Image 1 (cartoon, protein in one colour):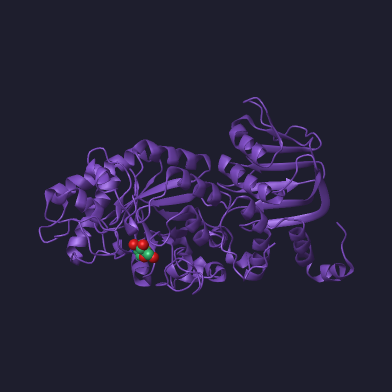
Image 2 (cartoon, rainbow, N blue to C red):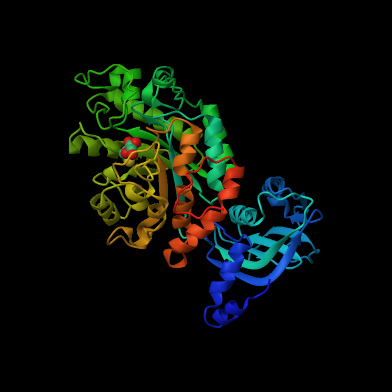
Length: 510
Ligand code: TNX
């Protein structure tokens, strides 16, 4: 790489500026932006002979990577040999675990040197995230026989938050196992590590519960607009969980209670109060009208059974219990319900997550509260020391329109263009909310207006890249101007992956 005359001058005063620009031209437009990225001016020649050497315990991850970037598949080392301190061959990529003290949790180091590429981390997860960065550096349309030059660079990276989430509503419109897997593939490329599945709502119950079979045989038969709906058998759900695990994504199942339960009430009349005189499947868009009947013992049996079965098929530590928008119970009835559900979740050994509406209930530092619109609720939850996930609707709701011309989407929380999704700081977003309370950021995709995979992609992309960066990269290390230029470089890869992204005019797409 040549340093230009202007650059040389600028370079004296602004060392980072010109170098970063060069790195971008060279394809180092990584999203989310790494914490530390230092180009060193040289090149590595990637060609048909480049080989991958890998620790035995990372072979599965490296295999996947090798296939996707058309590189010679990994040569693994025996189980008892760590390659960290071995001498390295030329023209090779080394992928290994390291106990260097620079690493914690998900962090990784990726060094492209003239003779080797070295990727190391303390955990398999760290290695996986490092490979996502490397995938973004290696041109997507590479012909394996054409050698290409990569810039030499040292990256040290770690996430701001441990919770970098996406949520998918499979209740309003149902999405198949294949579609959920595709969503998992697409988001894991941007280091998102939680997928919250909204599995039940008024319009449909989407997960098999063996002790209450009519929840799916009756309650899953339709969806918004009257289409055929659907559900996941427990075996299919486990398949999703397993698939997500391979991409280091934890599935958080949500069973929304005590409201948003019309599909359950239609399936089992005994769960509703006598005055809830509403027996037809619901295919409309209203929220807040349904509720479990607080006076009936069978309702508590139902809660026990559902939570027990969900806990059994969920290896991850979290169960989301919804708790939002219950308009027909009084405050005491509502609080009693949440307290009961919480005790039930705790008895399974899981951590309860709920929408912010649960703040008045009995919650403490072991519970997680998800913000969507009420600052008061979140301040109350923080006072009780609960952990907070930030999903402010005006920034993170992927079901909002980009602008008035968007072909689908809602606008109750405002229009959210790519800049709105990007240009905010989760740490200062809520007044008086100390950083120690914040677990992370999550981007919900409600599907009242999204019927197909293309619809999901149109709403999520590219805003989910913005939110992945908001959750990974501290605000002090990122700017909108820099992000929009990097995002532009992702156009070709998104097209190659057939992502039906919204080509926002704010981005100078490549
Ligand atoms: C509010 S956010 C809801 C959902 C809707 C969404 C539509 C929340 C906890 N509840 O039931 O699908 O708005 O934007």
